Image 1 (cartoon, rainbow, N blue to C red):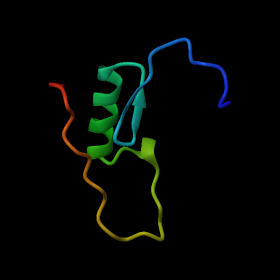
Image 2 (image 1 turned 60 degrees about the vertical axis):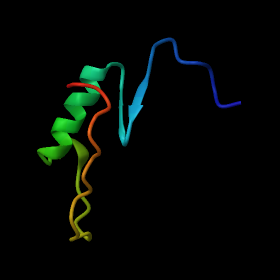
Image 3 (image 1 turned 90 degrees about the vertical axis):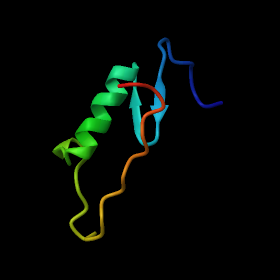
Image 4 (image 1 turned 90 degrees about the horizontal axis):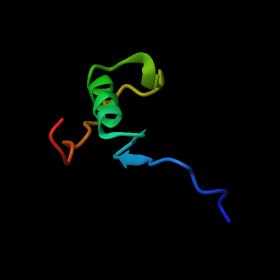
Length: 58
């Protein structure tokens, strides 16, 4: 169950999903820059989570 296998490589690191390490690195940079790409939760006024360091050289 769970559907058909994907025909391409998918990488997941922390909350980031991409087709390459470069895409994951870009997502992490966007997260750290508080890009609107990730939206916001107006009712939450706590600190933004800090992503762990990438396990490879970006």
